Amino acid sequence: MTIPFLDLGAATAELRSDIDAAIARVLSSGRYIGGEEVTAFEREFAAYVHAQHAVGVGNGLDALHLALRAVDIGPGNEVIVASNTFIATWLAVTMAGATPVPIEPDPRTHNLDPARIEAAITPRTRAILPTHLYGQPADFAPILALAERHGLKVIEDAAQAHGARYRGKHIGAHGHAVCWSFYPGKNLGALGDAGAVTTNYPEVAERVRLLGNYGSRTKYVNDVAGVNSRLDPLQAAVLRVKLRHLDAWNARRAAIAAFYLDQLADLSLTMPFVPDWADPAWHLFVVQSDRRDALQAALRSGGVETLIHYPIPPHLQGAYAHMGLHPGSLPVAEHLAASVLSLPLGPHLSLDQAGQVVTALRHALQ
Ligand SMILES: *Cc1c(COP(=O)(O)O)cnc(C)c1O
Image (cartoon, rainbow, N blue to C red):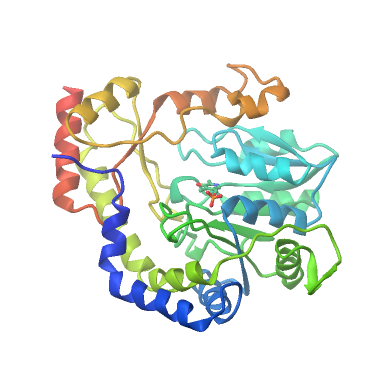
């Protein structure tokens, strides 16, 4: 028995003939940058997340970096980020020339704790950058209220939240810009790197498009120092196929999550907490255990693959050593890093396999 954490090959196999046709269409078009496939995906994805605009970019990190630059965040500015997010959230702020200011998450939801934001605001703060971690929407209402009161932008890291809803409304345009990754393992994944920014602000969309295309509106006329970060038509064509299945595939994820929540409730594990206003996309199913490493090893020898999101918080990475944040400085993030464990979850995990994960966990926790 071997249960993979996520079976990407099965995802491609299920849609193989439609994906083949989409790729063939791009090959025949003779157009390999921009064009109708990219425009059509942008239109379809914007409609899906209920945003007025979507701009395709090269990956999720660029989506974040370009969105920050698009709202004029740069050197001397501070951006509030979660202490327990994937490092890309921080790196995007660094790439924009600004400083990430971490605050601790709510230990129950693992998402940015709105109660801690105000104390982190300084005269240099320009934005709040919540991550919808594990596909669980962040608690938006207080974040937006604080942003409004202090004149801050809200840029969302939605790389794990395709299809998630906050109080019934799709993640996609609550803040000034919402940043997406279509890395293959995400709920909506390409066959390589891809990303997008969605927004209801036309000037933000226009600015992201400009910055991602060499800062050029007219070929060989460069208004600002942009970068090259565009969504490939091949990836756009594949994403158009997969977008049509996103809700159904998210429903399969939700069914497995419901099964785990039911079947694991009596074990000595901390289960995911879902506030009543949240409709998660169930990108990850993350449990917590004080004996995490032993548990992971036991599951591995039982043929169950698990992952850790994330084992080292950004402030303890070499990349941020210059911030001088030592172990103990962000204890909630550090405790999560030591105790979280992501169970197998995906649209191609059967309930039978999920049952085997439950059995293996029961056995390991005996
Ligand atoms: C995947 C991910 C990113 C980065 O996306 P890439 O497409 O890999 O650059 C950013 N933030 C979070 C929370 C992610 O999970």
